Image (cartoon, protein in one colour):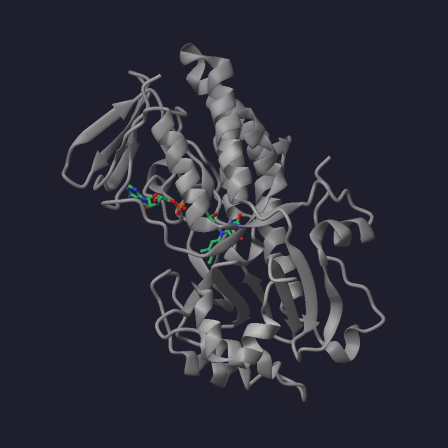
Length: 385
Ligand SMILES: Cc1cc2nc3c(=O)[nH]c(=O)nc-3n(C[C@H](O)[C@H](O)[C@H](O)COP(=O)(O)OP(=O)(O)OC[C@H]3O[C@@H](n4cnc5c(N)ncnc54)[C@H](O)[C@@H]3O)c2cc1C
């Protein structure tokens, strides 16, 4: 098989900090043992979890993720997913592509997709006006894919009214404040820990790793958010907004101090945009197929978009391998059947996951401590049987 990858950037872009990768995708890495080995090497195996109210009052003490899973009646050996460093996972995939001898063609911006049903070819036009054809073109170009014109229906981005502050920086910056350094330290100086803070109109999580401190807070839109990893804002803006938390109870002073320790030009204010499910993921002749965010963008706060993108890639590759070169159209349609329409005629599996991500993010961001005590609220996980 002759595979070409076209990328609009001029080099590998490892922007971003941490993200949550679901087991539904990562357990399939076992089929690529060398890649699995690298994945295991970059994964956190001994992480702890601790939960606070937004005020800093502890809710669930720090304990290993496995212990917390067991306490919930879940299998400690199969956590639903793990927090990963986005640049490391990106590099892992790049290594895999290199191992397979596939060259990434940088500076190749696709401006148009097309297909020729008679010749059974899909194609793209790049910015330099050149045409490139293949038996199958996979549009994996993320949100706002240029393939939407051919595939049918251009979905519009709608503001969700929410945004995320995100910051990742070398752990040495915590030296500026010994109290912050102590509070956000690793467990016993060696176990990475995720701390979550639940509050009204916002929730936050931090990850302390040996070399890096990361914090993320979902909040109501402030007006400076953009859908970009380059949209940095001043630390002062975050501190001012934290003061506006509804109710009498303010954000934990230690969290505010963490914001102050964050180096300038580091905090990103990322806009959380919702895009409706698309009516189709393929061109009429199934010679162009969308995968990942190009097919179905998830609200970033869902923690599921990359997981679904990986599942898409594995599902499509498997169908193509089973179908062979003479059955590309059928293989693509089989993949769509598995991923898009899990139970015919109308139940759209991935669209439900998109919606679930939206509603779970909403639940997480709306903890009212005056009414929540004594009442259990469960995030949805869906019934996928
Ligand atoms: C703030 C934030 C937090 C997130 N957190 C999580 C999380 O915790 N867990 C999770 O599972 N998911 C998360 N996601 C979602 C996840 O990042 C995406 O779902 C995932 O990156 C989608 O992968 P993709 O390959 O489809 O698209 P992308 O990662 O967007 O990759 C598209 C690639 O195509 C290239 N490209 C774009 N246009 C063109 C063109 N015209 N021509 C050529 N190349 C082009 C781009 O440069 C890029 O390299 C988060 C997203 C955001 C924004």
